[in-house]
Image (cartoon, rainbow, N blue to C red):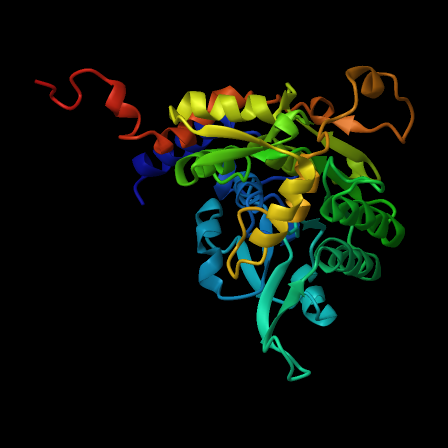
Length: 385
């Protein structure tokens, strides 16, 4: 390599390092080509949030092990987030404790993103031989996905003396919720704290982003159904948070894990809305003109009970209805400000993560639902005569 080329590379590296956020102990030119010196194991990395967590971890050259339950090709979209050799996919079974230990291996930090918004089912023959000949068998229940697996991960972290554990729960996690999903999230938190008391618990509100099941849900229903059902006129409140903000918060915890040991962090957006307002926001972008049908809660639960029997991923379940009928918001600002001591619940502001407004990013992935796309409104674009 010529002296001129070496000089150019050094200058480029120095320039890059000025614009890349660095952490203590990181070596290298900065960014994805650095080595942070930290190893992280991630369970549930192929989900909606997982790909953005992978993006954040790759920024500082964090070596990452991803738990893989199937074909490695299912994880290939995560590889570009890392430099060569900085990510590894380890096969495991959620019911096989030893294989889960192999994922954790020599990790300094373990992140549990495992979650399911509906209970997966499969058709199986009736063991009694009577009618009906086929029955639905639950594959992974909320109890197993949110409580049992979380407990196993926490126990393994304690046994293997892992330095830090980050467990992602939910802002809706409540013991008295009507939603089994929300109650299982609450039980999962307690199981993790019991097995690994110094775990960091993240509780995000409903996530929005390109692959979300919130804004996209309304847009898809508006485009495929004759009407959009609204539970009790959509009066329940929610406070959606951008998935990129939650991923950034996780990365900042990984950068300084000891600082957040044993802490609970609530992640929520800057505004609260009713579901009706969210729906109106969506159709204002998509320019769809669906009919809205106000459905009483009991009727909507009955409808969800029928739809959830679909052999593929259901667009609605009874538990989904229960969750959307309850407020899904954070505490008041005064609640967070007046807390003191180690039990203080933190927020994104405590991690110096700025909340991204929903209107800033929603158009970028909702305009595809417009008839003709977003260029159809541009005069002359289609060479109008």
